[in-house]
Image (tube, rainbow, N blue to C red):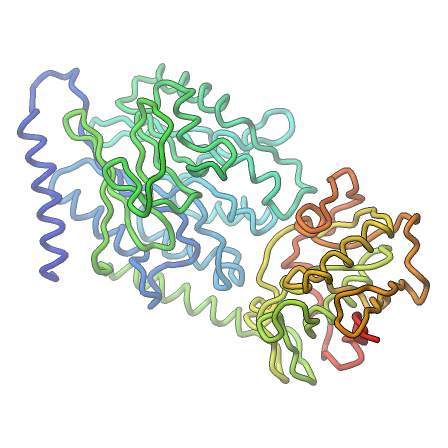
Length: 498
């Protein structure tokens, strides 16, 4: 065993043992001791030569604490199915395969489990060996999608777990045609705590994918401040690692409550170790070298081989080098945007299609296009939709954007749109759609992303006509539906300086 790792394990065990000896009592009413190994927001960092601790470290830590006689539970707080190309190519199997070797007792879901359709998510989670809970995700008629809580007993220690999903999922999920909905976390927490208090559990533990901080809707600390009886909150979503109840990266105030908070951060940089010894809660992070487990590491290799095989499959080809946003930068058109916007116009009856030029990533060299290359070209998730807008609203955005230099938020359009400017490219002289001057008083229909609608055009959701699908899926289909990309499929320049 590496000396540094051994020192960490021995030190942690000594601290726990000292607490046990200091407070040991024969009184059965005294709080029972336990340890929870926890991970979260791993986003595809599975320990596959990626420089992270991966899943094997959690497995080894769990086994070592069990060998010392401690009662150990192992959980994950979500965002393990989405976050990189390996996960997308395998619809989450890249993580699920090694997770099944870890021996998780329980997992919950995060927003990135919705990187796929809800049906795919639910089906894939059915492949997990561990139990899945989520207390506030429902189908119509208040039918829970997953079991809302779980009581797990080991060596006489009964822990009542429940889990909360961020309400932001209503915006973050790629499939708003789904009829799933997220209930208010505070109300769900009150219901779950009420139930678990009546079940004779030794502790109530919240697996939270709510996040902590002012940028999150219903963050974990606010929920716990409004709901009494939550003993321990294992937080996820905000990528905010904690030790001894405090954030390690920067000072962040916690809303006061009787709940103890832990967080393992993100990307498998740490593995969390939460404990209750003689009634005292604590949380530490394992930060040292990756620990190897033969079975988990074997599963990681299997997952890697599967992802590489799928990701390298040819889905199209191109007869020319295609530039992307990373090649051209802001304020300039790129080939990927031109090609994809032309394809999008064929999907609906919209008058025009539009996305910002920074919606596209790495360019593609002449030759075969693999799934991985296409994913690098269209890296972002979100929702695609059709919406109503006036000619004046679009003209105002284009004029304001170009006057400021365009940047990454410069819109690219389908080939039926032309924007004529002065020689500097900053002053708009005219805009045409299908060779006809843009009519400021006319209502048009466009195809774009929810991000463009809200954050760029600043339009409300009552303008939405229909949802088309996932941004990533829709843009990927522009490649898979085309045998070979040629220059004529790009169309001409949409911005013309005169």
